[in-house]
Image 1 (cartoon, rainbow, N blue to C red):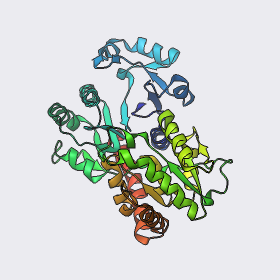
Image 2 (tube, rainbow, N blue to C red; image 1 turned 135 degrees about the vertical axis):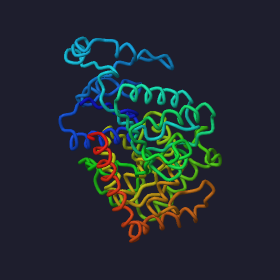
Image 3 (cartoon, helix red, strand yellow; image 1 turned 180 degrees about the horizontal axis):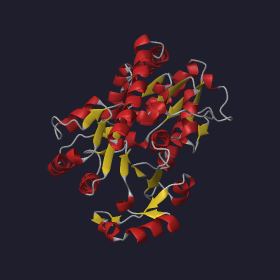
Length: 381
């Protein structure tokens, strides 16, 4: 069986962590399956090749698509391309597992939804399975998007919302559909690795910034002016607790620049960690005293491991995540004073000891296990 893992990449550590999470489940559920990865700007050939992935021929440019070429090729030619060159087409793929995280909604170009819907329709026509793994969806307000999604999503094998708000956005498009389900982010099943160089983590508080907090994608406009000052004030709060603030770059050059800017304003020669291995990134988070985080999967990695976490939000997925873990008060707002930030930090330190939080953390892990049981039952059925 050839399985394409879609929507993942190697720059955003959350997206790469989802890639590893999916691969771990494939090894458990379909040990003889091979994976396929498509090229993109953040998914270079060497990174894909290191995972033993077959390379998907990119038979499209923007909205122009030539996937029919793959279906037109004879099985002999496709077999030669696969076995000799490591190249496959859509026609070779048996199952798509879409792990995009957050790619479909008003905050993203409409072309993403068009391409998704076209692909779902082609796979359905060819009798292939297409699973959208738990991710954030919506909101959807563009009429063309609504029409396309209402037609295409019911043709998918399974559509998994990652939170209740995303589920409601989809339920309007898939009313009464048994194919629409809700499961949490599944990276809570991934076993982390703590790198040897990360020492005395119990005395360190990680700061994980996100350039999206300052972008026009952010629905909370007050963050534009207050985001960096809030993080700098929190650095001072952390130091008053006798703890060491450390910056962690969770994605690429833009977040790296943010780390440098925060370090310069906060002073004290803050260490900036850039770790390429997402399993080690999760390990660093799990070995820390606490985390101040603006990256979704950084927050998940903390909350799922019982690490105190203060978060910020640029989309509904953060509000839903902190609600799911029963610690909504740990999600910051942009106009908090230094005293209020200190109160929130104290709350975060104590919230992970709460029985309700611990029970919910166990429940979410169980739900992720149930997710893969359902995916396997549908794919194997």
